[in-house]
Amino acid sequence: MIVYKFGGASVNSADAVRNMAGIISRCTTFPLMVVVSAMGKTTNALEQLIPGVCPTQLRQQRMAALRDYHCAIADELMAGDAALHDDLEALMEALDLATQAPATTYNDDYDSIVSYGELLSTTIISHYLRHCGMDNRWLDVRQLIFTDANHREGHVDWPATTVAVGDLRRQLPRLSVTQGFIAGAPDGTTTTLGREGSDYSAAILSYCLDAESMTIWKDVPGFLNADPKFFPDTIKIDSIPYNEAIELAYYGASVIHPKTVKPLKNKNIPLFIKSFLSPEDEGSAVGPYQGISPETPLYIVRHAQVLISISSKDFSFIAEHNLQTIFGIFSRIGVRINVMQNSALSFSVCIDHNEVLLKQLIEALQTDFHVRYNTGLQLITIRYYTQAIIDHIVAGRPVLLEQRSRNTEQVVVEG
Ligand code: ASP
Ligand code: MG
Image (cartoon, rainbow, N blue to C red; front, side, top):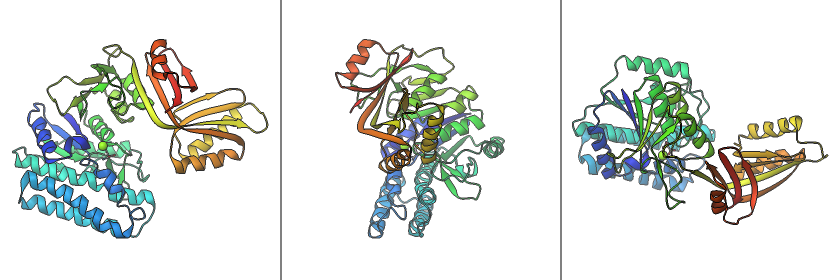
């Protein structure tokens, strides 16, 4: 059995869904499980419908835009299909009710609204595949992947998930369609796995089903050595070791979600990254390789970074005791450190810019420390660097922090 994952961009219009159906129709390995994200930018649109976020007078207008977008795709694919129409209406009605419920906590409300994106997309796609003669079963992933009740960033309950997917495995349909990103909490409510979490969903299912392979269909030809939005000449990497892919995702490579590779590596399941625009092309493979091929430098840029310098008020060394306090604060507020460096009297960290969290963090740190920070920075990571490459990338900008290991150079510069 194999798993295909299609992201939002691969199903953002009727034409895109037709293209996706074409890819599925050419698949020759079964059973095939298809994991799908919300269509296009639907998740962003749903975030604007959360009670407490959405001004009352804009609710109906935003609901209507969301409904029109999905109904237009459904009509273009299968005009007048009563069964699809009824299923979509039922989802729209439930969503409409959810958006009118009194606000509770942001995270709980988030999951109860935002999860509709994947329910809508998979409903349209499952009907359309059937319409094209590809019989399939629509699976509610909330009965398969279980998490704790940590809404908006659920932690997978592996034992419960393994049992549920194991039951399915005994009678796995030849073709099934299910949702990425969403999952079930112990109390029966819906949770989500964090933004862009559909890759992770597909990896969880691949792991529990002992898939032969997993393929992510993207709008890029594969795993590139840099983001084509910022680098003119990118090179496609043909093969990448699991560990390298995990490191790259950690540094911020956005092609795969950071949690995706680990479950696959644990069962030696190869991960293919292919273009839905040219599906016959080779793409990239992540697997048990020795090194990347072809050998080339890799660039990862994190934008909108903040560099915080923390020093003790009493000139005490920044050693174990102070570091423990500092890390405690970061962990309590939930801020991820992208790179860190310490000297005798000061400790510097680079983090993503989030106005709310930054304020909380600075306030908490100021109790015991002097704190300074710079915003508007870039954190550039170069794997397999040379000095010439670093000079070219830094391009004369002042370097605020630099860290170098045998394979990896990290610099923080002005954006
Ligand atoms: N639809 C979700 C998001 O946009 C999950 C995903 O696309 O992977 O974040
Ligand atoms: Mg997405």
